[in-house]
Amino acid sequence: MQSMYFTEEHQLFRQSLKDFLQKEVVPHIDKWEETGTIERFIWKKFGDMGYFGLATPEEDGGLGLDLFYTVILLEELQKINSGGFAAAIWAHAYLAMTHLNKEADDNIKERYLRPSVDGEKIGCLCITEPFGGSDVAAMRSTAVREGDHYILNGSKTFITNGVYADYMIVAAKTDTSLGNKGISIFVVDRKSEGVTASKLNKLGWRASDTAELAFDNVKIPVENLMGEENMGFSYIMQHFALERLIMGINAHARSEHVLDYALKYMSEREAFGKSINKFQALRHRIADLYGDIDMCKEYNYSVAYRLDKGQYVVKEATISKLKSTKMADEVAYECVQFLGGYGYIEDYPMARNFRDSRLGPIGGGTSEILREIIAKMVIDKKKYKPATV
Image 1 (cartoon, rainbow, N blue to C red):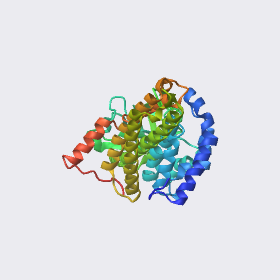
Image 2 (image 1 turned 45 degrees about the vertical axis):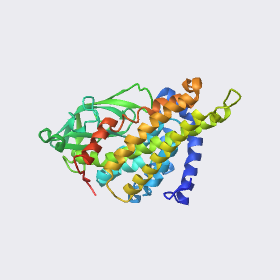
Image 3 (image 1 turned 120 degrees about the vertical axis):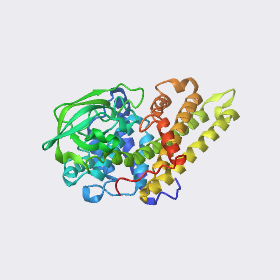
Image 4 (image 1 turned 120 degrees about the horizontal axis):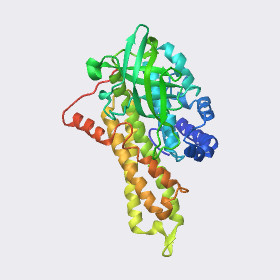
């Protein structure tokens, strides 16, 4: 891959990662898709390779590498045809661990961040609630301070890694009178009394565990508050830019992979005396899809570059997710069609990709919410500012 964004070191990393995934992950994917449980050993192997520490500073046990190493990790995870496995990995490294990197103090980092980098502890981010969906400000979970503890009550849903995680980064209201200005972020240990998890049965992302969580008078030590009290909403909004860009990158990488597979199939499949990649109707459809993928990919790279330079790219990352996931859904649909009846058979990779792709326009902010965010910025001239620098 020739690109202005990737150095020779990046390319060596990509090849090493590909080899690792083929050897250590791919042989287990079908089992994990069937059972819905990713075996624990693979987390430690990822940690040993340093893959969980790409974005973590060296002083905290990570590698402190530029964002394009993360781009490579995300892209290659999409090319083993398990959106669920990929989601479990990046939800740990870039949802839970992002908050640890940015808001945790030294005490929390020692207890949770360093073991996360090593693959010894798995984390999840708990924001979405059953009655709130994409409306973060509407959350009902509360954390009331009593002496040297906060008492957490409430529920969360659609939480990736929520069943098997060792700790949870939880958002809750510490001052209900302030609305979204009264939200705080905590790290909650899985072993805390009053935490229960129910596994959700999903259409796609079958390998990852997705949970509905309940918190019943859970005692959180005061020292487990992340950052400042009542600043949680700002922290969440700031990090949404990275999450949305991640989902945009996932979408272009997944689409690139399945289109490559479809092209290989079409070059070998014959109808009416010639391979089906010779039929103009199909060739022109492929040309459109390829162009859409390439435009999304180059846009996503440019947003990643700006984010890596410290720019606040909330609008651009929102566009990335909105447009890339819509494109990926179209590619998934068309590639199933290219395979005909075989595209509908579970033994072929298209069926799984078709199911996995559909979550793109839903998770991490629905496309409807994203359009409204963009509209506010473009039409109403609303400006979003970073909570931390």
